[in-house]
Length: 257
Length: 294
Image (cartoon, rainbow over all chains, first blue to last red; front, side, top):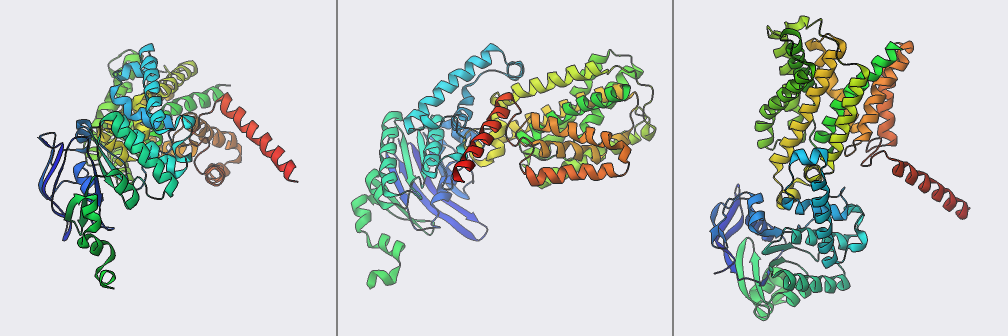
């Protein structure tokens, strides 16, 4: 059974068709690359999977359950976490609190306890603090625990966002251009991190990325989207050698020239 | 001396309302221009209970808080469910505030625009101080718990918060109820301090004062708004001798804060010894650095 399956998903905004009849599925613990030119509809697909948008047509099935049109919160609880193309952290909170905020779903103290701050609250807060540290250790941010999230350099903000997504304990992780704006060294670092977390948490990952080195390094299977439609699906060799992909990225005239 | 006690009592009462509002506006990031209505509801509920039904003071205060909380659910359910954004929500609260005042002016039990005279004087300065300290303490605990942290997450980035499994409606609703109940408590204390209430006391001017105290004090601080509201009440009182100029001073404070502390007096910090210490440390470090450069 595939972990995630999109069946003929279409999304229109007024007259604009952002995603048209897209179908694909991912197996457990697989890394799938999602590539395509700018504006092809890649992020829209992520938004459809995570419930930000409801599909106009088609179905999305996760672990055998139809999650089409469910609200984002219940989808997250079902086990799908994501990062964002433009980093979205809780800027004014510390690095650690960014993680702990996500872990609060495990905190079972009630409002009364919180208001008078009973020992139970202190104990749970401490427990979640330690747990947050573990996630920060995985991505290598332990030196920045008390820094405010928006004071981190760009690359580290990306890592913090990944750590926050991990703290949601997902089965499926959607990474939206994690390497955007990174230099080659940072890209290598990121590839290692993604390998590591997949191993450690048995994750299935869908990766949107424009850095082809990153995609080719990480993804045995790649989906190519163009103008909202599925252009092709294949191994990295197949994608690299497919004239349609080159045409989509570079345009007709450059291919013939 | 009575006069100074009086000003201090009013400051304490308004601190309660402001701290409550700072949870909603400062920490959850939704602007309200109608929180005076919650003070009015708390004031009238508790005053009617002690005046007509001779209910004990503390119980009446509690009833005022509960009433404000219930009304805030009526306000919050449609507006927060619809995820009204920023200014739209503010306009909804403005309408709510005015509507509440007009209703109070037209009910028989509130005695309309004439108001309720002869309410018993239960709110002495120590009572006001105790409640203010209690509310500040409770609010601090609230903010430093999962409830407050979730609220900050929603303020910082609603989309990311939702994708982190935080239910925006629940978080915003809880903050609204909390702030409304603080407003209700402040209103109840206010009624039993002044011994007289009338709808005209709870206009949008009061709402605006509360909101500007939160903004001027620092959105994301509890102590900042406490300082700001104390300043807003104390300065015009001190300048009473200067007569008409005191309103200018009020405006001047706001302008000065906007220029020198654009994110509020305290910004996102809390006033603590540690914070003051760090400022001095930074100052001396900067001075040393400056000397070296020369």
